[in-house]
Length: 412
Ligand code: SF4
Image (cartoon, rainbow, N blue to C red; front, side):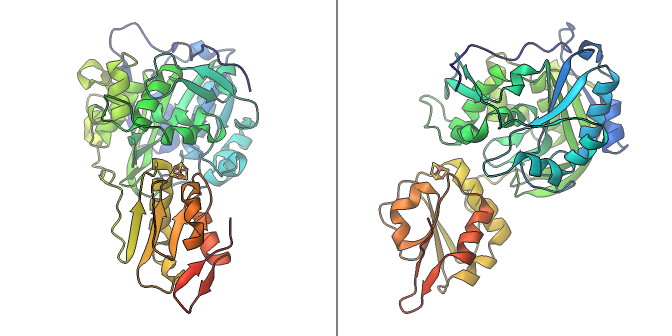
């Protein structure tokens, strides 16, 4: 592990001194052509002879078009545009905990377009991280950053346009959380409240992070977005737009408007903008073309509370963090019906969080925080476990005591 250093990404060479950040929206031509059209507005000459790292969202094993990961044709266009401008281009990612980076590149279709173009794929979890200080951080005071983020000259954030259960939206700023090394990114979900702030600590932490990791250029993929329970359990929403800008906050603000929400309602964006990290006020951003707001599509917001109305499932949540909440919501969305195959009771109890004093016999205990109750039900280890692991434990490990209706598990 390296020692903590004072370091942040350099200012973007694409920001013009016009007094107003500029953002471009392209639509109606398909993912590749839209990306090319939007990028054509940017003077890419600063990348000549430079090393450009594309940071798409390839953080999960999801097929192209599922609205979970970046459309490979958007990445393909970015590779071609930066290659044509004389850059050396690579693609990097550090996925969510439990996901293999190179497998994610394959599943998302990004590996295929990269291979066609001889563009290297980088598993950013392989090398040792750079530990950097976050001097003005309120929720965090250090980050473990994948080293490639500082080794490359230009960082391009290429997120998918999605609603997010914990952060409101996930766009160019939030996508940089995938530049944090291995499971250190999960730690942002486990922070204590910040005194004097009502916002969730994860949102304050992302605002803190954005002081250090502001991408030089943002290409937001709104080809197929995700509404509702993003980042992975929502519904796909056809939009057909690409949004490009050098100020990631301005670019995110325009994307928010295209999703029919406001950056001023997104905590990590308004907190960071208030510190002067970027501009989210649409009146202070020049957006082209003039009729860009006509491309907006209403996105269903993320649920306002974490309870999901699954009949006969009781969620016992005592002091859990957002990482386990996400796992559970994804699990229930994917496998909520199936769960009853593994229980002999009509009402299934599920526990998350570290605050449980006593839980009902037979409870499905999810996450390391529930380990001390493991003898009272089925225990799924992990911090957090991924949702499919819960099903694995349910289907492979538990033994059912049909005499008294309890469920025991010897899994660990
Ligand atoms: S086990 Fe779950 S609730 Fe506990 S710290 Fe880990 S992710 Fe958070």
